[in-house]
Picture 1 (cartoon, rainbow, N blue to C red):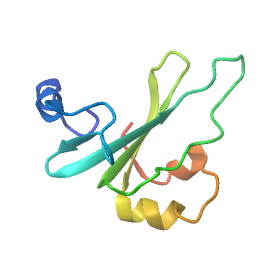
Picture 2: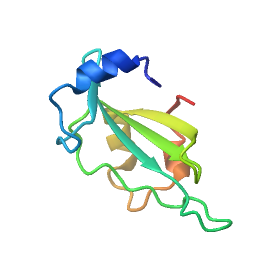
Picture 3: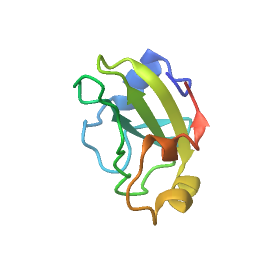
Length: 106
C-alpha cells in the first residue's frame, strides 16, 4: 500500500507466488519490489542499530521498514536498485541512518 497497491491488487500479484521466492517479494506496475524490515528487540530502551544488506540485486526497488516493538511502521524508505548498490555495496555494516538516504514513503 505504501507504493500504491490496493489489497486486491496485492492479492492478485501474489497469486501463485511463495513466501520465499528468490530476488523480490512482489511486482507492481512492472517493477519488482524487495521488502526488508527491522524492529527493536523489545528490551527496555532497545533500538535498531544494524540493518542487514540485501543479499542480491534481483529487484528494482527495495523498501526498508522500521517498526516499533508492536510492529507499527515508524519509517518506510524506498531505494532504486542502482542507487542502493552504489551507496551500499562496499559498506560493511548498515544502520538505519544509511537507509534514511532513500525516498521517504512514511
